Structure formats: C-alpha cells, structure tokens
Image (cartoon, rainbow, N blue to C red; front, side):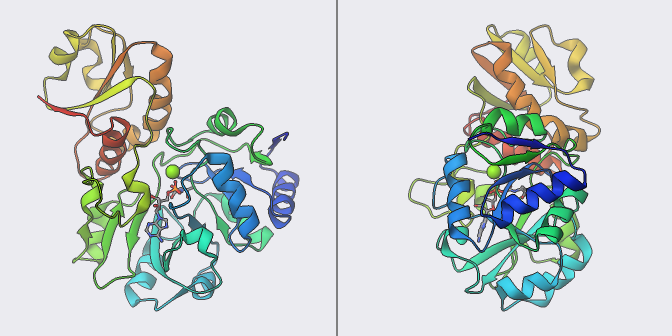
Length: 334
Ligand code: TXA
Ligand code: MG
C-alpha cells in the first residue's frame, strides 16, 4: 500500500475525509499525539487500525467528536458531571469513559459496555471530524508498544505502507496523550493521567480516585480498568531505567555504555552521553519532548538508558506514568 502524505490545506483535508468515508485509515494531528483515525461506526475500517498498529484486540479505542450532540448518540446514562467536565475541558486533552449505546460496535470498545470519548482542540483534527461528518475512532498512530508519535515524521517512520494517508501537520504541543477518566461507575476514576491534570479535575470532581495502574504495575491476573495500562509501552529497544532522587548526575557519571536522559538544569554536571528532555522548572516541556526523546534513545547505541524522573504532580504525573512503562517498571530510588 502507498501511504499518501497530505498537506493540512483544504484539498488535503478533503482527501482525508474521502478516504475515511470510504472506510480507510488516516494519521491525523491532535494537540496531544498523532492519532490513527477511522470511521467509528465501520467495523471493517476499525479492523484496519488494529492491523496496522499490531494492537491487541482487547484494547479499546477513543472516539473523537467535534460536537457535544454526538455524545448523546454514542453514550447513555450520562451523568451531570460529564457535561460539566465537557463544558470546562472540551475541546482539549480529556477523554471521558461513559456507558455506550448500540451504535458503537464491539470492536471499538473491545467488548466493554463503555466507550471513551474525546473532543480534540487541534484545528486540523476538528475539521476532519466535522467535514467527514463521522465520529473517528483513533488510537495513537504508532506501532503498538513503541513511543507515541508527536510529529508527522514519527507516524511515517512507524506506519508508512500500512495506512492510507497521513495529514502532515504540526508537531503536537501537549506531547503526552489525553487524560482518561471514567464517569461510568459510581465514583469518578482517573485511568490515565495526561494533558488535563489531576489537580484541575479535583476542582470539579473532588471525589476522583486514582486507579492503581497509574503509578504501579498490576499483579499478574489483576484486571485492568483501562486495558491499555497493562502493557509494557512506549519502550525504547535500549534497556531503560527510571531514576528517582536528587543525585542523578553523581549516579549516572559512574555508569558506562549508558545514556542519561536529564533535565536542562543538570546537564553541565553530567559527563556521560546525555539527552536533555526539557526543564525541570517547566514540566510541560518534559511532556512535549518525552516521546521524541524515547525514540532518540535508541540512536545513541548504548546498552542502557537512565532517565531522571519528574515530580509526580501536575503534568509531571503523566510523564512519570509513561516513563515507568517505558522502563518496564524498573525504577531506581537514589
Ligand atoms: O490523546 C489521546 O488520547 C490520543 C489521541 C490520538 O487522541 N489517543 C490515544 O489513544 O492515546 P490510545 O488508544 O493510544 O489510548 C487509549 C487509552 C488506552 O489506554 C485504552 O485502554 C483506554 O484509553 N480506553 C479506551 N476505551 C476505554 C474504555 N471504554 N474503558 C477504559 N479505558 C479505555
Ligand atoms: Mg497509545
């Protein structure tokens, strides 16, 4: 298959919409990470997403919408808190899990009775959803298990020849995926931290709890509330460790055959090969760069990578959540 590289101008967006209406799959920019989109109502199109990514069939997809009305078509038993969250955080990086209607095929929800819904703020994404007239199921547009794509080039590197087209848009400005919350049960639950922080959510949902899988590995046999959280994920091929604590420079300077992934503030103290992933003082920069940096780690041709862990608050919680998975839960506490 030849993958079309489309501009994000009017004609590129029209071509993308035509492909989607015909049951094809298209890489699209969003404010979080690039998505691999298909018509959420077309099971054959959805199958192509799972095929291209090599995604496990039991991992459900997020449905992307452009109008609040679509929520009523695809979800039911919608609590008032969902509408308040939508009002406050949409369009933007928040995904809300609700009970689904029969309009959502089982392959989208991976057999669950719920559906995850998000309204992206990225202009190109919004136009593709509106102009195609379709809710779009879209996971991140990477090969399953590898770091999520935050540039059009990342999508091409992973999926060229496997998907119909990519809209070659701008780099993603949030850099980590959306926050996923469930409002389908009795109490609100944070399933995946992301672009909207836990602190922001607590203002509206004071009783929100954090699912165990956010910060630790599930025991074997334990059921994942969010199936995506049970997999090793975002991982470089290099053996990666997450390092918590202040004396990172002293620690990594004793390592050989290793690359350090560090904050800009400590760069000059580190004497082994290093990659800066942002400023500790501005954790949103860590989020913006983390997935590109995880891809770069393999270019340094070292046996080991040691990544300095961010603080676990604000957007740092989302970065930490991705990094423990990238490190396959190998955390070193200094
Ligand atoms: O920012 C994002 O959310 C990006 C962009 C493209 O929108 N999408 C994304 O999709 O990250 P994906 O498929 O890589 O991650 C979706 C996560 C998975 O962990 C999945 O298990 C969870 O959402 N999820 C989807 N539907 C769910 C459901 N009904 N119940 C619980 N978790 C669900
Ligand atoms: Mg993903």
